[in-house]
Each structure stands twice: as structure tokens, then as C-alpha cells.
Image (cartoon, rainbow, N blue to C red; front, side):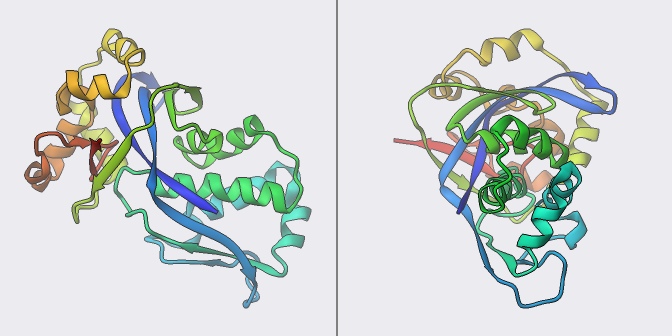
Length: 252
């Protein structure tokens, strides 16, 4: 099953909730960039066998976290029975530490797959509730909208109906740490809630033609302050996604 990447057409920070930030953002699925997940026959004695090239240890992996949280939600028996003979294989194509939501998309896709295969009978709202505990971007991928306004800390996902966009991405060999970028943003931030609400009502193509990259993404300046080489990729017509390091453009 395909786990698609995403880009943020715009991303505005509009407040704080305890130690976390509240956002208003337009998420777009990137249908030409995806990881592929499939269940295969198990070859190890591991409780949960996950096969793939990841940039973290198993317990830090978003898919493993989704597995644990689904067990804790009352489905431990069903999952342990299923994974007694099955493993999960992931072919990674979405770059890591890129602002493209690869880990979150993998977790959401896994939740849909195990929901079907283990007959958990959870609806999207219930899957999104589990997914949000894994990561803020997971609910967007659970709902599977091509375009959506995402707000709160990521738990509010509202479909935005618009013309499908063809997105091209480029990911520099720069690993942007999301937590570090947000901390840098807090040192010198400016919140514009009125602009965020205005952007949420505008089509993505119009947003990209009406605003520059800094105005569209509140995290760009913070990321540039930490990773100066990103400046080399700020070409006309290209925009910064999330906390980076990926840039994207909309093609005809």
C-alpha cells in the first residue's frame, strides 16, 4: 500500500498550547512520491518485525509507535495474533528529515492496513485519535484528503476542495530537526492569526502566486538561521515545506 508524501503550501504558527505550537496550514498530498508498505511472511522471533531502511531505532520509529498505541487501545490480542506470522516490509522513497511527512504517512498507512487485515473495525476518527498520539501530521494522512486545512496541533483536519496540483520536490542533503527549528522560531517570532485565517480560504495556486516563501512559511527564517546552506536552494518558484529541508514547486 502506498504512503504518500505531503507538502505545506503555507504554514502559519498561531499560538502555543503548553509546550507545543498551534498551526494553521494547507497540506497537499504528493502523489508522485511515496513509500510502499506490505505485509510479508515473518522470518524472525521478534514480537513486531519491521523491515526497511530507517534513520532511527525501532522504538523511535513512527510505525512501531502506532503498533504499540493500537495495542494499548485494546487490540493487543488481535495484533499479536496477526504478527505472530507476519512482518511489515517498507520500501522507503520519501527522504528522511525532509518536511515531507514520510514517517507520519507510514504510520497512517500502517494503521489503515492493520485495521483491515486484523478486522479492528475502527473508523477514520478513531484511527486519527491513535495516530495523533504518534505524531501531529498523522491525522491528515489518515483521512487521505488530496488537500486539507490542518489546524490546532494537527488534530483538526478539514478537506479543502480544489484543483489537483502536480508537485515537484527537491530535498537537499541537509537534515533539519523539527524540534530545533521550532525552538529557533520561538526566539524571534511574529504571529499573524489574521493572515493565517485569510490564507486558509485561498486556493493553493493563488497562494503560491500571491505570497513569497517567507510569508507562506513561518519556519523558513528559523530554518535558514540554523542551516545556512538552505539559502542555495531558494530559487524563484520554489517554496519551503514544513520545517524542511525540502523545497517544492507546482508544475502545469
